[in-house]
Image 1 (cartoon, one colour):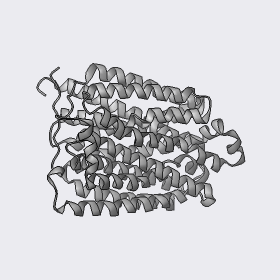
Image 2 (cartoon, rainbow, N blue to C red):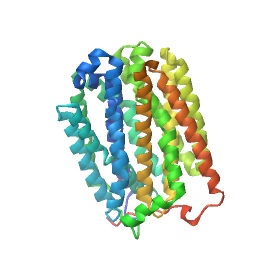
Image 3 (cartoon, helix red, strand yellow):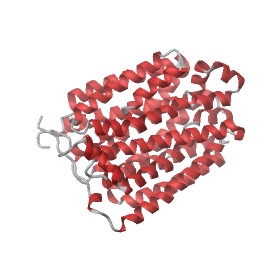
Image 4 (cartoon, rainbow, N blue to C red):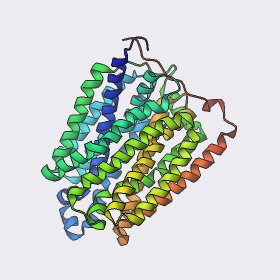
Length: 413
């Protein structure tokens, strides 16, 4: 660490956060552009029923989430011996390729294929970038390290997603995705010139990384995120149609609703990183209680503009308050497979994305209304809370494998 000046360290952290910004764009822009995607890619279905068209376009969200689920553990295992900076650069190259391919693909099926390719790198990026950031900040700040990378995602939701959503509404969703590809290309250059190399963990191997799955607590911690965090995505996936069809606001208000949710996410992430380093258990449990309450509030008050804006802010804050804690939890229960633990958290988050979007879309397509997805969200968050309580009770007799993780130091630069 003595080889890094404070200026160089922060430049590197900002570069890694910029990657999180790009991931926030590529993951959440689709949610604001679902009606546009449905009109362009599924014109016959959308003409027959706008709700059915939007629900089918929701596969843009689901397929991306499934790509993360597949890619995160696979890449973590295959790259266990790869230096972290080199891995991050490789993942950014995959993002550029998959995102541009999605923007240029002529059919819905090929767009989904491009999204799947880009998604393969998502979980491993957050894992590798989070470990790099934690290494530069030092022991005892691992949740803060991941919150810095996540801060890029929250910043994307404050102004990036609204801007790109507005661009997509004005110039077409394909232009929006080309802009996202440009963000990834810029990030690749910044990482190349600012981020120091960090060696993989000592004794790293595919076998060691895959060994994390022998732990019951790894599976349980992953289930907490995969099911509980779905409460957030059940709401977030259908913000655009709720804004226009339920609250009755013009389509131009969708970017503003997304911006307010992004502000909530920024506040929640900043507080959550500090809180998780102080008391991980309390952060997880308090966060899920807050998510249950705020998602239920959304289902009650989103008919009114003030209620919509207030509730999406609170949902964003509750969701991202939990984010750093869930990441730190999986690292803690898999200390000998840090990259796998970090990547599995992203897989879990995107299972949540897939489950939330799919179940929310199912009840909407069944004719129960756009706000019915909120009550699916309440049930998912409540299930996550129950699983979290169970997991922490198992910690009463922690095993040596669940001790505090360590972080490799950056190699000399």
